[in-house]
Image (tube, rainbow, N blue to C red; front, side):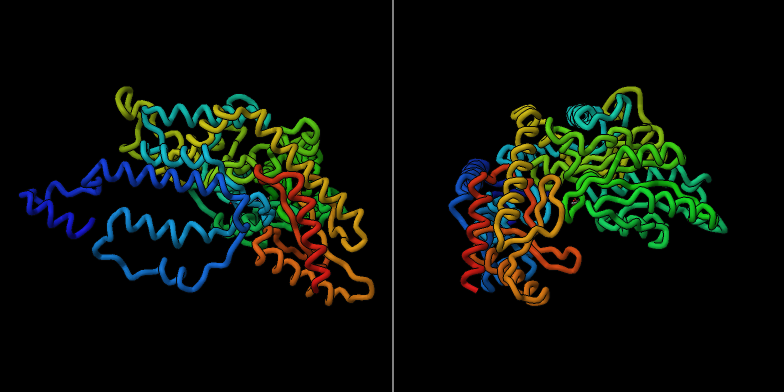
Amino acid sequence: MRKDNLRHRYHRGMTPDDLSLDPLDWDAFRALAHRMVDDMVTSLSELRDGPAWRPMPPDAKAAVRPPLPRSGIGEAAAYELFRDRVLPYSNGNRHPRFFGWVQGNGTAMGMMADMLAAGLNPHCAGFEQSSTYVEQQVIEWLRALMGFPEGASGVLVSGGSVANIIGLTAARDTKAGFPIRDEGLHGDRPRLTFYASTQTHGWAAKAANLLGLGNASFRSIPVDAEQRISIPHLEKTIAKDRAEGMRPFCVLGTAGTVNTGAFDDLDAIADLCARQGLWFHVDGAFGAWTALSAQHAHLVSGMQRADSLAFDLHKWGYLPFECACALVRDAEAHERAFGIEGSYIEPTGRGVFAAGIPFARRGLELTRGFKALKVWLSFLAYGTDRIAALVDQNIAQAQRLRRLVDDDPSLERLAPAPLNIVCFRHVVQGRTDEELDALNREILYRVQESGFAVPSGTTIDSRFGLRACFVNHRTRMSDVDALVDRIGEIAREL
Ligand SMILES: *Cc1c(COP(=O)(O)O)cnc(C)c1O
C-alpha cells in the first residue's frame, strides 16, 4: 500500500477500517493488468528470437534484493521491477532450444489458467463449489489416460516428488502389517524395505527419511546394460531380506529414468509383486506420458497394473509449474494413509461443506490452489490427441539426435536412448577420458553461455557428456540439427 495513497484516503475522510489490498483505482489497475498480459504474451511469442539463457548481471541481482519494503512503491513500480530485472533472467526452460534436465516449458493458455485460478482463488481442499467438480473430472481424465481402473483415487499435487511420496506412503501403510498410523515405527518391528534401481530419482531417498524408514530400508538394485532394474537381482535381494527377518513392502518401477529415459520392465515387476504380495508403485514423472503414444506405449506396458502411479503435468504434460498427479488403485488405501478426522471437517448434508474436503484426505496439503484448472482448460482447448502428437514429436526429435550422434565420428553416445533422452560426448582420437571430460564440460558451458541452447551435463560410467532431454513443445526438428552443428563449431574452436 502506498503511503501517498493512504494519505490521500485519510484526506478524503476515510477511516482505517476500510483498508484493503484492493486497488484504489480499479481503472488504473485494469490498464496495468492489460500491460502485464501484453508483455507476457509478447515475451512468449518472441522466445525464439532471444537467447535460450543469459547470465543475470550483478546489478540485476542487487535490484531484485531491496531491503524489506515497509512502505510500498505501488503496483506499477513493483511490476516494472519484475519486467526489467526478473523476466529476462530465467533459466531458459521456455525456449525452443532448452533441452536441459527434465523441465517443462509451460503454455500461453496455462499461464492464463493460473491467472484465472488465482483470480477465483478457491480453497481446493474440496467444498461444494465448481473447482471440486473440475478437479474430480481432471483426475478422472488422467486415470483413463493412464489406464487405471474406474474407482481409483487421485489427487493433484505440486510435483512428481510429492506424488511419488504419496504412493510410497500408501504402500507403507497398507503393507506394514501393523497399524502404523497409530503406532509409528517403534519397538522391535521388522525393518520395512522397498526396492528400486540405482537409477531411481532422488525423491526416493528423501521419502525413506520422511517416512521414518531410513536409507537402509531403500534397497538399491543394480541395472542391466539398458539401465533397467535387474529382475534377478531384485528377486534375490527380496528373498535374502526376508530370510534375514526384514519385511519387504514395495517395489518401485521407473517409467523413464531421469538420467537416460530407461524403462524398467513394468510387467515383470507387476508379476513379481503379485506373486510376493508387494505393493507396486510406478514413478512415471515424465515417462508415463508415453502411454499416449501409439508407437511407444509398449514401453509402459504393465504401468496400468501398478497399485500407485505418480506423474507430472508440468514436464511432458507441457503445463506451467507446478502440477503433478498421484493415482492410487485402491481408494480406501489412499484415504487410510491421508484421511484426517475432526469435528470441524465432518461433512454436513447441505450447504458449502456438503462435498466435504476429499482432496485434503488424499495428500499432505489442506489448503490447496486450483491446479486442476490449467489441466482442464488445456485438455479442453487442445485435446489430448494434440498432447499425444507432441509426445511423439519429441520422441522423433530425440531419435533423430540419436542417429546424428551415431553417424558422426566426432560424437559418441554414452547410453541407450530408448525414448526422449540422449546422452553423448564429443570425442577426439588419442585423448584420455579425463581430457575428454574437461573438453565436454567446456563445450557444455559454451553452448549454454552463448545463449544458443541449454542442454545439461551428466556422467555415465564415469564419462562426462552432454544430455539432451526432449519434453519441449516448442522444439522443431531443425533445432536438433542446429544443436549438433553448434557443438561441432565449438569443438573446432577449442
Ligand atoms: C522430475 C522427476 C521426479 C521429480 O518430479 P518433480 O516434479 O521435479 O518433483 C521424479 N522422478 C523422475 C523420474 C523425474 O524425472
